[in-house]
Length: 85
Image 1: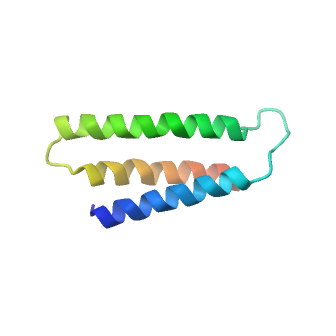
Image 2: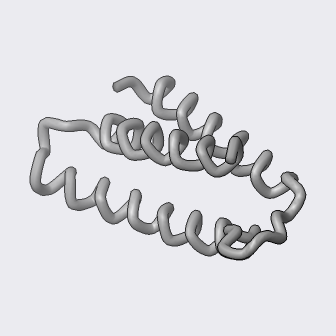
Image 3: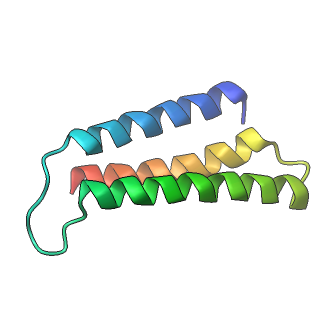
């Protein structure tokens, strides 16, 4: 994956996250709130960075952009699901 592709996925991640933060809060039982989304996203960013570091050591032939792209693409799907439901 190229740097440009990874950057585009990161831009998409930020756009989806921004929409989630602007979405009106849900009040039904079990709803995920903005504080929960924010905290989880911060933890996910640390997870992504740790996985990229691990991947660089364990799989040196795979670029950091590829790891970032794969992980970010999956996270985008998760956040989009939260946005739509």
